[in-house]
Amino acid sequence: MSEWISAKLGDFLKIHHGFAFPGESMNDGLTGKPIIVSIGNFNYSGGFRFDSTRIREFRGEYPKEFELSPGDLLVVMTCQTSGGEILGIPGVIPNDGRVYLHNQRIGRVECDEERLSRKFAYYLFLTAEVNRQLFSTASGTKILHTSPTRIEQVECRIPPVREQARIAEVLGVLDEKIAVDARIGKVTQELLSRLFASRVWDYSREGAMPTGFVQGSVQDLCERIGNGGTPKRRNPQYWEGGDIAWYKTGELLDGPLLGSAERITVTGVRESSCSVWPAGTVLVALYASPTVGRLGILDEPAAFNQACSGLIAKSAFGELVLFESIKATRDRLQSLAVGSAQQNISQRVLAQHRIVVPTAEAAASFREVAEPLHRRRIIAAMEARVLAGLRDTILPQLMSGRLRVKDAEKIVEDAT
Image (cartoon, rainbow, N blue to C red; front, side):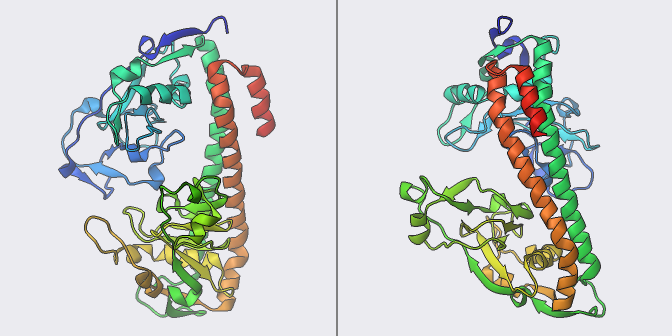
């Protein structure tokens, strides 16, 4: 610890503003043009989530100095909540063959690499202490803004470069394992969808109905369909100390739902229009573009808000058949959304959405292969959640010097 120094971030790095790309040249369709990096693309625990958030291309002319390179470190400079929770959240541009553009309200971090490792800087921006200082100096009330100057004025303790590398390596091992688990989840979901497509006729195609399937609708697969509710946010009895999982549309990412960001109390459920639904319930987002039609499967009893619909599958089919039936025809379901400011579909439209209904034998054949894959992705997701919790526990201790690197290496080795 004697070699750690107290300094301002500006002594080690420089923050660069992004460019205000004109909205008329942005487009949601992906044709290979450069992609605008937006605040919504950041994972709020660090990193990017391009695969599960809205991506927009830029199809106009732009200054080439705002074209990003793989490995560039970016940080969030605007937060739309009064608590400033995401100010300073970092992300690293991936090396995936796509071109990304440096948007306004996002800072690009240029490190003096001889004194501050970019990988260490990434984890430094994840610390609560950096966020606290950015929040305390931010401007605005409902929407908070920081700036390159304010970021550079943040004070922190910096170890020697060699120790920075060791700290980043320890935390990087956990992040790499979390990323592997995420890829397992993504691959198993793709396998499930391909398996379903190979056994179930695509209703959008013309042709004869395959053996073992009949023309039908979502409600033909369901024992029960119902919407969520909206408990009052300002009533602390509804939220403080809650032990019932509570889901919103943004948490539906086309996979198992293994842990909600919020919990609601029994009182909150009882005194509102929502109810507790059992594990195995399929959730469908009814509105809030771009989440319309996104899906999730409850892994525990839970409640959810009015923007979601809950579907319990008939036992002859099971939740995986129901889930994949809707997912396979989601493009057509989304085309039925109405509204200008906010696209939405009604519960009635969802229930009457046209799909093909398998016989009990065809459903059993699919489930025999699908259920082991579903369990595998649940295991991977649960492992990733445990490792993320471990990373979040040791990160502040490592970044402050309270935990020695060799002790952290042993902890990570035991966990992985």
